[in-house]
Length: 554
Image (cartoon, rainbow, N blue to C red):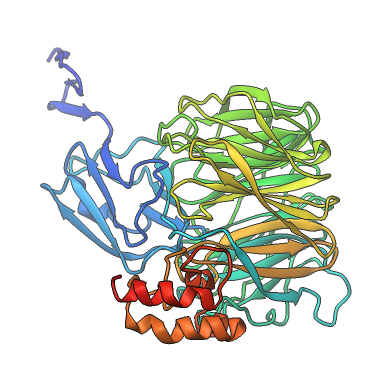
């Protein structure tokens, strides 16, 4: 029998080689998904919906192949449902996301169509950000707690705000250079925004660890933590037990003096891998996860700059593959390394950083659906915003003055107006600088918060579950963790914050006039300035008549 080649038009290639007809169809492909890539202001109770170009094999629709992880909320579980002839998969979460959470979605290349063809080898990944409620960006310190206990200086140099015990309240983990440990502060979970003293004993890590991230590395539904030690050039991975404690650290040697870290699915298998930027090694290192939270030896690659220091990850070209953004301190450049989906990267963009970059982050600051870059430029005493074009390139830096040794950058929607605001931490300057987003990715200075000593970083999270974003400010030398509650929206006369102005507001209004401290204690998530009904800047007896007129409809 003579072999005959049968020509076919895409998407299938069919041929016969001394055998029955065989058709090699193209890969299972994603047609659409919701939420969209880099979406902002996503409802906190949202589900995840993805539609494929053909029916999917139900046996492959599971949490091994579809993973959803919120940096604050943790791993999301729930119920999968198939519809649309098995072409659409819907995940209904078993709980809501926290306010302003950055949520990462990964789909593994082990997902298969009913025709047995898999998703592309690179898999598919993206992230979105949940909505935060309106607030005034008026911050009141409600707690200041020492990180030391009875021990000598710990030197806080990082923090993670995430739900470690799946109770729906965000806990805090400090990363400590000198004491070589993690200290875990569990949320009191009573709406006060306060935290218990740190758990004993602290979790051991390596000396001078600072870069950090969290993920569910072993896919058990619990938050895990990774940190990197610049002194020992080692990455530590600690798997969470779901109660605020962790197992012993796994350590992996990386390039010399790692100062940056990112977690991402670099090879399409759905689990989180780890990358570091190594200043002394002048390179980056990648460690691949075996799916059980165990990492292989590091592989080193060129980061694209001189003295790679800062590191972040995002999908910078909207192809469903996570990329890297490298901050090189030596030549003050920001380098975009596009992910190839197989654990390797290709340089796409190389732009000035706007200063000696110490730390960077990625987020969509101008709400155009593309990921941008924000930096803290330590030696230059400023921060930079570099807008992404969605095709892997970034624009020139827009710099914003801060104070000496600007060492940390964070974004979050602090006023709940739908765009991301910005916090820079300045070590030698002894200040945290808070900037308000003008709605287009430019920023206006809003408030400067002084430190007791030297700021290390800031965490932006909802400490009291009132759905707006608060601040936790970490002081490196004083070893203090200071919690600041964000005041809720100003609504004249709504003194009990139920969304209505009526007779139920009379008693809290009276309390607000007579005893400010008692009002703040009784209504911790409300704004006492709602009693300033005549808008003269003071809460006093002159507000009584306007308040009465307001509740009576006059």
